[in-house]
Image (cartoon, rainbow, N blue to C red; front, side, top):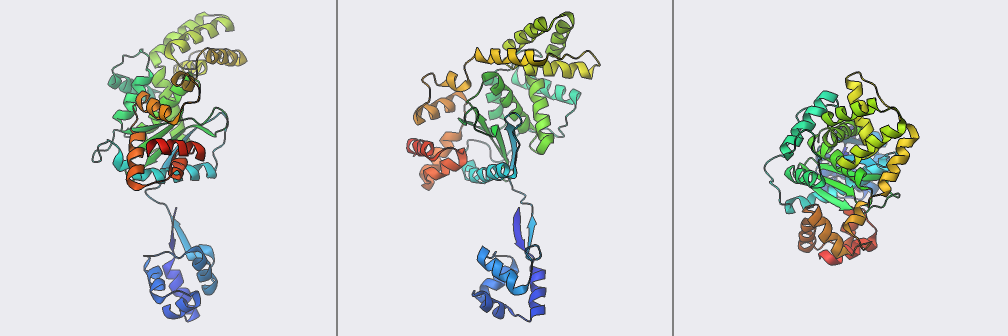
Length: 375
């Protein structure tokens, strides 16, 4: 929110108090020119002067200040962990990161004149979501049942001029697994994805974030619901959900149904929970039988995860990578321009490790290592 002085209220209070600009300036220990600039709206008082101005004119804060939305304020979306609750502190911190990313825009290898493709009127409606997902699959070059792999998703992000920022935020300590920042001023999208996670979940998060890229105007729960629905339909389309539903209908035991779901989860590299969720959405849409598999499905899904390396383990067999290895690997594997843009910006503007610490939300020690490698 942008703060501005309520100039007319201040002028009226000055008249009632019989204070000229010169007299008010004297009481506030500032120059008359400064007061004139305040009343023109070209300058805003420092906090101490603002407090003294309110006390001198007997104006409460709400009478002295008005707040208006910043039309260029970053738009934020979180892929939260489990039941984690998003607070104002989380949102404020993410928006601050967004403002700090703006200077990097001019260093990106993207067309600054053409707005990336976006959906005209995205809605969370089953038929619409399926049509959009089918359209995207066709643009990728896939038929209606082929698996969407990581390279397909990465190429789509680049096509839409969305900057992928692979980060290592740990598996348990964060509020979010992914962070989406849209900057209205430059119409750029920045997608932070946590690579310290299971591959099946990671793929869904990437598809979820792609849903946000296609719907930059949506916010809040509406944006999250759309992105989740889009991801599910893209990774496990209706035709496959229909086929899976038929097999589940014929199976008579929970064990056999879980085996069917696991087969599809392994084929499409998504979680067993996502498979069942898409099957039940299909069933609900066409008034068919839905399935409840209880805790057994969650236990089977956990066993499935244990059979695969995490994304970080797959990328860095040696464990925790060096700054050089981390930058080179994620830049190459995710085809992201982020670190090249960051390197050029740091060198040309003499920015410190503190800047890296802020935009990557990483410990200062890690930021210093990255800074030494990039500068």
